[in-house]
Image 1 (cartoon, rainbow, N blue to C red):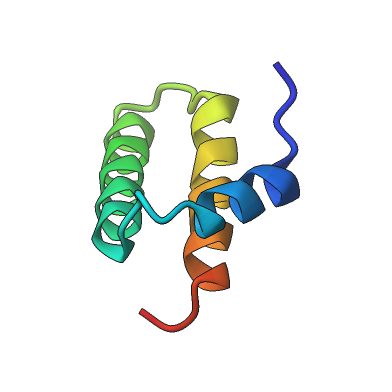
Image 2 (cartoon, one colour):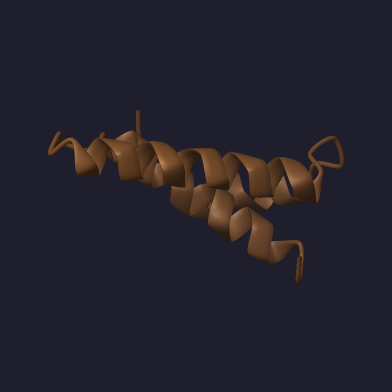
Length: 65
């Protein structure tokens, strides 16, 4: 499944049901999971990296946290 990072981040940033805390918590959880996978010397799923990029962009489009 191809994810258009720009379009999806715009859509998420505009969604009023998602709070700034939700973005922060999701990004923190993803980063922690990626860190654990990397420390186990396992391959990091590319989808996780895409979602991290989407969440980072959506969070930044909302303005300073």
